[in-house]
Image 1 (cartoon, protein in one colour):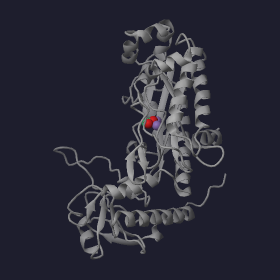
Image 2 (cartoon, protein in one colour):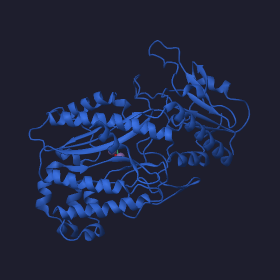
Image 3 (tube, protein in one colour):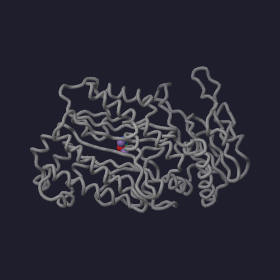
Image 4 (cartoon, protein in one colour):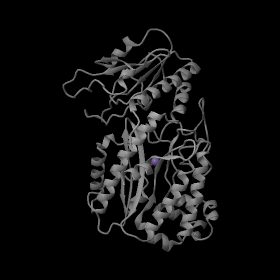
Length: 439
Ligand code: GLY
Ligand code: MN
Ligand code: MN
């Protein structure tokens, strides 16, 4: 497949971003925008730094990820990039940027963030986006809510450039997922699977969009399991991997679950795969994402009853809250520069909150889908001891076939997660597309 030209997509993206900023600045009453990439942070009492992650409101403008840089923009003019290249022999300073995006900026190389002050045009009311620090002290208003609301709200709809970056991130993530599955099937430990993943993704850990979740058996019942066991125990039955990759800062967020052998757990995975595909097909403009979440509960209730885990009707499983014992997180979230991307609860561009459905505190997206929204669809069924114990202690306990639960609990749980774009007609599924292309 020939890929579209990222350079021309980027130029359109930047034009759109500038138009969006022009509108937002006018509405919020500012003359210009200063956006900082952020500063390195250090461990307490130590001189080594945390991995650097740029301010996402900065990265929306350009793919570079160096600290202490500033974007300076005034409507009507070209955006200026103050690129910080410190004079340093302890660390290698970032190279002068190159690539498809650089010509769109007036690039000025500075040695220190303190040079910003002398290079912001005089006069006017400036908005400063990013963490406060000495470089921007007194230059303008920090993260003014009226402005950031408008900018964050707009970020939910991805431009064609952003969609292409996300497709490329998905391709890298899927390549690594396939390597991880192969490592699992050849007898690797969680830690070794993780190494195989990073190598195939071409990423250092800190370049991944979030910490890999690589969970064998019962570990999969810990939603964000973070330990990577160095030893593989004998007789592993199941493997859940939730891991992503990035392209130009844009993330993919993919989960797959594998059974070591055919049998009941594989049947549960197959059923959840069908549920996942049906829910992903609901990702269309005009659909309230909360409805997809509630639909997921109904579908999961169907799987729980069909597989004999829950007795009685699927409706009763939803009504009683029993489905939340097995599926205690949201159906997904916005995805972009951040894994849980900005603006998921916003009622409108001026702010306000769109509420979560009652009884569903962990849903992270409550908006109606629009063209260009990229969301995850990640239904799951887990056997989580603490939640099961609560259910066992009340009336819900009678609706559960505990022998069935005990048989499946050693497998931990199933989650299947794809990244899906709302667009006219059928949705685009980056994840399935990348798995099909890689097969
Ligand atoms: N990997 C984090 C999430 O799925 O939201
Ligand atoms: Mn996710
Ligand atoms: Mn995930």
